[in-house]
Every structure is written in structure tokens, then in C-alpha cells.
Length: 266
Length: 320
Image (cartoon, rainbow over all chains, first blue to last red):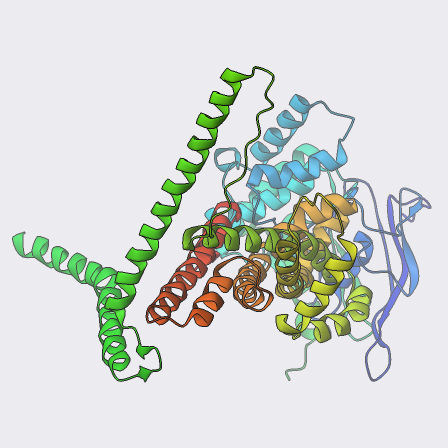
């Protein structure tokens, strides 16, 4: 099923970082095609360059070789059509949750939406992430999970072509993480965004993704295997816990991570 | 129940005692020490003034001020009466009011000093904050400008003063000057000396912005001006205020020295005049000035702290 015009194409991407002892090849020939509305997870051991892939798609890094094509146009710089949800939320601490989303909305919809339309749109996105009750609190007044919700609202409010999530729930406790995963699945069922998410959590990857991209260990990391998750949606974590297909997928990912790409202990 | 309440009162009492009691004890001990030491220092102008002599002298200085105010009011009243009389005799008489030219009092010297220090400081901040932001944002500009800043920063105000005096005399030649030359000389000297902490601290604060926030700005494609306004300035604000507070305290110290050396009106000149005067009251008058200078410096710093508290988004970061 190799369609010639993928929605998002990561094509033979390599990147080398200069170091005092010569260039360090972090990624080597990463190749990935993603269709519209697809939810793709990148999984791999820490330090394998997952985040680097994401940053290249975001335009924050420039690939040394190869490139990223989104809807037929090459990515050369960061932009709101590739919204990023950062691992540590990256909200501006001096603005309220509402203002943090507002700064993005103003930037994207300047001249396209009226003031009241913008306010409605911000409030709508706050509702999507269940943050409408604490819109006017500052980041230091809300919990880590709530901050991440606002970070997601900020990205959603940009109406991005691709949403890039960099270990969005990595810093949260297990319960909060499960809540946010459920919220994300709900939103995804509604909006059908194209998402690339980085994770190191096998359950999270299987639960949320349409495909899981497993990356080999660095240096010169690349795509190892791709696993298509053919589970019906909506997915329920409790029901899936006893589902043999689900457990098979889990097992496949674990096998890749802990047998084929075993990380040598330092 | 009653013991609980008593324990609570005890805790409150201890807290109050610490917040108010200890500073009072500290000041009292200092005053005693001052009085004892002062008694043992004998100078050509008599014994070194202790707290009591200073208290008496500050009362005198205040009375001098009130006396001068009365004289000033009388002077203007006399002129008015005289003008009214002349107008009654001759309706075409052109009214002339002569300004009062009495000796400046201690209180008016304080006013002059405050106006000079604040104008120098504000002008310096208007230059230093934008420059600091620019240096913090651009590592190339930082590399180019840093050596100059590091060389000019430690220059003593006393070294600038002669240059400033000569340059102001040469460039500011007007028959009807808006500002007096002496004011300009002190103000510019203050400005030159208090630029640096604000520039350096602002630049450091701006350069230390977290990479994540910069990435947010890049993803949103904020333009330069919005980036500076919404991300750079708020995140550098605490460092900026640290710089401003350092600058203001330097400005105040420099001003006293500048006024003293350049014979510009102000507290510094008051100290110098008393030193030259050499009467038996001079030492205690100078000590009054020392105390006032210290108190004003303290108040200026507190004012900056209040300002920071008012402007800053993070009230918790505003300490001490």
C-alpha cells in the first residue's frame, strides 16, 4: 500500500551533530510515510533519537540529509501547522491557561476570526481537554496533568495539519496518564488529527496508535520495525487487558525492545 | 483547649518577637556601642558625635528649614504687598517677582539629591534595558560589546567627573539654560556609573531563557517584537530588577561623591560645606547627613522592591 503522495513523508532523514571529536551521526536514513488522520507512535530506548525525528518534523532541527514533506511541501522551518506538545508542557508561566492558548490562537487566526470567535474557539478547546473550569489559573496554580492538558489545548487550537507530541505524558503519574490518554482518544475520535507521538510506554503506544514505529538504538538510529495495530475503536483499556490480540501486539513491541534492541547496561 | 490556645499565642508571640523585637535589640545595641566608642574619639572639633548629639542636631537642622520657609514666605509676601501698592499708584506698572535666593537648607539639599539621582537612574535604565535585551538576544553583539562594558564598568565616578564637567561646559552653553550645569554634571556622572549592572543583568537574564520557551515561540512563528514582549521580557524580569536595584544603589553612592567633589548642590555638598566650616557642630551635622543618606538609600531600594512586586508575575520570587 505504498501510495505515492503520502500526507506526511519523512524521507531518508539523517542528521549529524557536530562534536569536538567529529560529527555524531544520530539518525541514519529514517523513512516513514504517514496518512491523513493516522496516529503513529515512535517507540525506542532513551537516546535513540526519537525526539530528534520529531524535532526535524517540527522544523526545529534541520536534517543533514533527506527531508520532510507535508502535503507536497518541504518543511524548512517551524510553524503552527505542525503544532508541538512538549514533554514538560512549556507553558509560559506568566500567562494564565487561557492566555497561553490565546497567544497561539491570535497568531494562527489573526484576521480570520473576530475577537468573540477567538474567545469561543479558545473556550471550545479548553472544554475539549476538560480545563474549562480552571481557564484563568496560572501554570503554577494547577497540577502537572492539567498543565499538559493546556499544552494539548494550545496545540489543538492551532488546528495543525500534524500534531507532534514529545512524550506528552512521560512526566505524569500512572493514574493521571491514564486519564489523559482517555481524553486524547476521545478528542482523536472527534477530530481525527494526524498525530506523531513519542513514547517509551508500551501500553500507551498499543492503546493509542494505528501504527507503532520501533526505532533501533543509536548512534545512527533508524526505523527498525513497524507494527500496525488493528484493534477496533473506541478502545477501552479494561476490555483490552484480556484481549489476546492486544497482548500479542504488546508482546511484539516488548520483544523488539528487550530482545532485538536490548540496551546494553552501562 | 486552653493549653492549645496558649501554645498558639506562644508561637505567635515568638514570631512577633523575632520580626520586631530582634531588629529593635540590634539597633539598640548598635546605638550603645556607637555612644561608647564616640565618647573615646577626641578630634580637633571636639568629641566625636554620639547618637544624642546627632538627634539634637537633626532637630536644629529641621528648625533651620522651617525658619527658612518662613523667611521665604515673608519675602514673597513683601513683594506682593509692594507690587500691589505700586499697582494702585500706577495701573500700568509691570509686575516683577524676584526669586528667593536664600541659602539652601538641609531639606532642600535632600530634594535636589533625590531629583538628580532619580533622573540619572531613569535615563540610565532607558538606555540599559534595551541594550541589555539586545546583547542578551545576540551572542555576536555580546561578543562585540562585552569587552567595552567590562572595561568601562569599574571606572570610578571620580574619574568621570572632570571629563563630564568639561564636556558639559563646552557643549551646554546657553544663556537661558533649562537645567543648571551642576545638575547636568552630577546627573550624567550618575548615569555613566549606574548603567552597567542593569545592562549586564538584563543580558544574562535574557540569554538564560529556557530553550523550550524559545521553541514555543518558533513553532508559533511569533515575530521579533511579540517574541521580545511576550517571552523575553517577562522571563528576564527578575534578573532585570536585580540589575536595576544594584544600579540604583550605585547611583545613590556615586551621587554623594559627585556632589561633594563638584560642589553641585545636594547632600554631598552639604557634607563638604560642613567639613570646610569646621565648627563644633560640624561633625554631628555630617553624622546627620550620613544617617539620612543611609535611610534614603534603604528607602530607594525598598521602593524598587515594591515596584518589582507590583510588576512581576511571580510574587514568590520577590524576596529581600
